[in-house]
Image 1: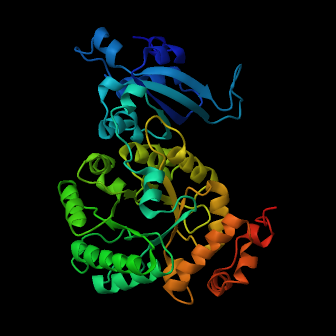
Image 2 (image 1 turned 45 degrees about the vertical axis):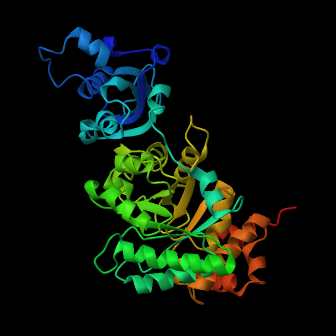
Image 3 (image 1 turned 120 degrees about the vertical axis):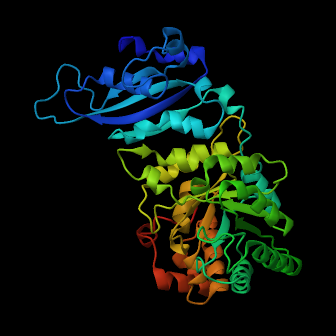
Length: 438
């Protein structure tokens, strides 16, 4: 089979159906035969190896080999490669027969970015799935609307608190921190990703204490709260952890889904006995997306695949916080979490990592009301204490929804003023970009 035999027109693939179309970035030397190279990648990830083998028949290849459906050079040289050019960059697409891996994520990823993840400057940019493939996934149980209905909050952005310190405390200390955050107006309290069923803070004991306090506060104030308990563990213990947490009274779950496995998130979400929202935490994601030349795009890991697997809330970096992250990528992730996509419910984007009152107007301006503000240190490290820290965040949310600059709102709210005095404002706020709506 020649390199030309590997090529297919995109419309041919669309008409045939049954293919997952993967889009890649590739950087090569100047003299590489790009058609041959990409064709070799298509064979390597489906039927073949570096040389022909006897049982790789034409019939087998026709049914199972990936097709090359697009090769695009950037910039698009046409009649010559400039003499001073020492590299060439391409975007290309391969169409993989879905029959090769079926409706499951581990073999999908093994196929589209398996061995070739070690082949130099090659990065998976996107995946397009056929309708029949997506229909095999149930997706999120609750999504944005379901979480809002549980909390009884129809419109405003939600406030999440990560308990700080991250780890090392007993349940008796954790419940005090939990209580203060909720008293200040937090809607969701999540475990830090660094604590799960620790010997010094057992999960079941923690859940019982936290949920008893949540009940007490609700009975006194009518304020509901979700507690997303971290059940991350080895694969054979995850469902047992989830069910022990639920039996102890948990009303939401959290999983470090990239270290535990994306399909373990799916198994939890699709289990009919696990009927609470699930928060998916991003830790480990940087190992997959940070290189501009290898791995996978962040919107795939933190957006499309997390939603496909059934997360109701996805934590990912804010471009205004402590982790370097392009604003374009954070917007792209939110788009993949919230936009219409088959039968999958839209899910909450939760930007985190250094979120404080100063960044609230920017995030709400970017994402709209259907987002969750994830604040840890800004609440527990507030100069006036955690209750005031939560109040300051709620005050910033209210101001942003009304179009009131934080500097104006701070005149009426000492908690917000203390936060601004301690940590400052975004440059945009200082320049008056977030102005009062007319």
